[in-house]
Image (cartoon, rainbow, N blue to C red; front, side, top):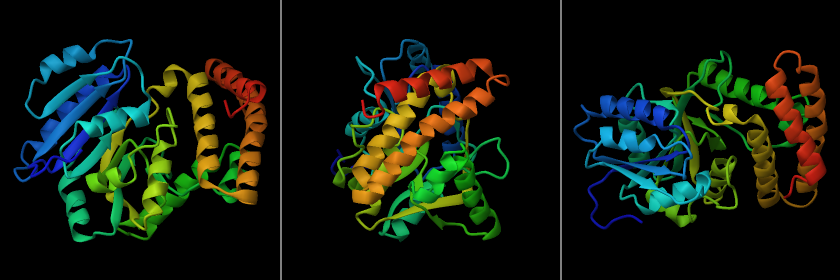
Length: 314
C-alpha cells in the first residue's frame, strides 16, 4: 500500500530465486548510478522466493543500508505473487519491477519519472533492455495475434516481433513508442495504477504475467510506452538456462492462461488451436536441432511431449 505523505518517490522491487550473485552486481550498479541523484528518494525491496541457494544472506550483509530491505518467503510464490508481496512492503509513488539479472548503466529513473509526471495518461513505461542479438529488440512488443502465432509454428515469432520493434525504434528515431507490453525485467508503473488493477494476476506462476498486467492497464485506457533511448543491460534467461524443460512448460502453460483470459469466442479458439499446434511443430524443430545442442534439445523435447500427453491446461 502507498504510505500517506510518503517521501519515497520510487520503490524498486526485485524477486530473487537462486540469483544472489546477479543481485549483488545489480545492487552495485544501482548504487553507482543513483549516488549522484540528489533529487531521487528511493527504496529497494528484495523478495527471496525460498531459494534453495542461500547466498542472498551474504549479499544482505554487504548492503546494510536504510533504503534496502530483504524479505525471505517460506515458499516459492512465483514471480507475480512475489511482486505483489514486495509491493505490499513498498511506499513509493512509482514502482519499478527489476530483474536480478540486470545491470543499470545510466540514469533511467529521472527521465522516466518525468514522463509520468508530464502525462497522466501513461500507465507503464519501460527502457531498452539490451541483449547481445543485433537487429532484434525484445524489450517490448505486441499482444499475441494470428500473424505472430503462424510464425510461431516455425519458431520465428519472437524474432519477427523483435525485428519490428528494433526497426521502429531505430529508423523512426522516435524517443517514445506506443506498444502493447513491456518486458517485466524492467517495468515502471504508478503505484495507484498498480493498485487499481489489483497488481499482478496470481494465476500466473511465471511468464506472461507482465503481458496480462499491461493488458489490464491498457483496458483502463492508459498508454504503454517504450523508451528506446534509455537502456539497461539485461542478461536474460539466467533461470531458464538451468532447467529448459521447466522453463518451456511454464511458458506455454502461462501463454494458454493469457489467451484464455484475454481472448473471446472464435478468436480465442483459433489462438489456442495455433498454440497447441506449436507443440507439434516445436518437436520437429528441436529434433532437427538436436545435433547442435543435445542437452537443450532433449529437455525441450521432454517438455513438449509432456504438454501434449498431460495437457497444456493443467
